[in-house]
Figure (cartoon, rainbow, N blue to C red):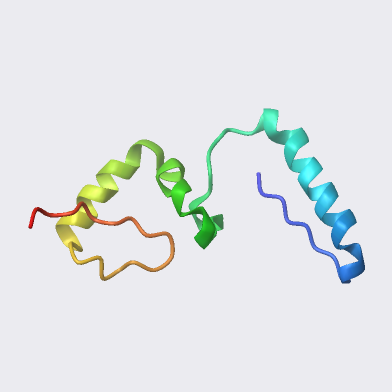
Length: 85
């Protein structure tokens, strides 16, 4: 589930942010517990592994093999494993 809350004026901020947060909290018991990777923000980098779940380690392995210098690091980055110096 993805909740999009939009409004037109700053005067509505408190009310609209409030209902969106309340809606999120009240629907939490029905959520799957996952995360959609394309909706994560830069501040949520700690949730990337969570979003990919069991697939994450395989993605790290692929990244280490095919992009060890982390050239492709934009968006929700999966860093390669550090290689021994």
